[in-house]
Image (cartoon, rainbow, N blue to C red; front, side):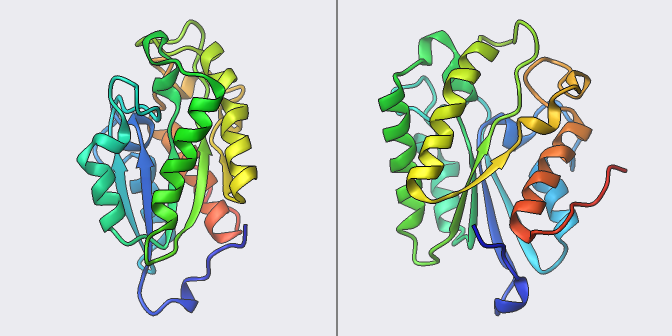
Length: 207
């Protein structure tokens, strides 16, 4: 997918980051979620909105569907020029598990709701970060490994951008201290991945 040049926009480029707690940034000090760090990397030519909600599932039949949360409607009303969608981690919980066809159909529907916006945003899917060891909160690495190819298939089928939030953590389990949620530096790894996808430029180095 082509990168975004803010000079071609008459106003700051609006980026909606939508997803679950990996987007929201739990268990970290204020200002360290990946959308907040991304905002600082991109600067004043961009406006980054954090529309992540902890516990949300992609699947509509899950226990906390993202599409039923008010933040989803806020993301649509944000009139984004770009959308970063990253969901699926909570769908690995045993009581939320669905089939491949259900997962793909739900993701396609969610993407289409953003494609229908007047702002015609560019849409990117995020591959969620790894689950460490035995996992936590009912979230498992085995479940995540199952859904990652499904996310890849949706991106390919719909010609979307694909941002790999998974690979930067390989060899760095310490960046995910509770085995599910990245710490501040882990969130920076995700922000760097998004920065490079949006701009096509190397992301700022770790502080």
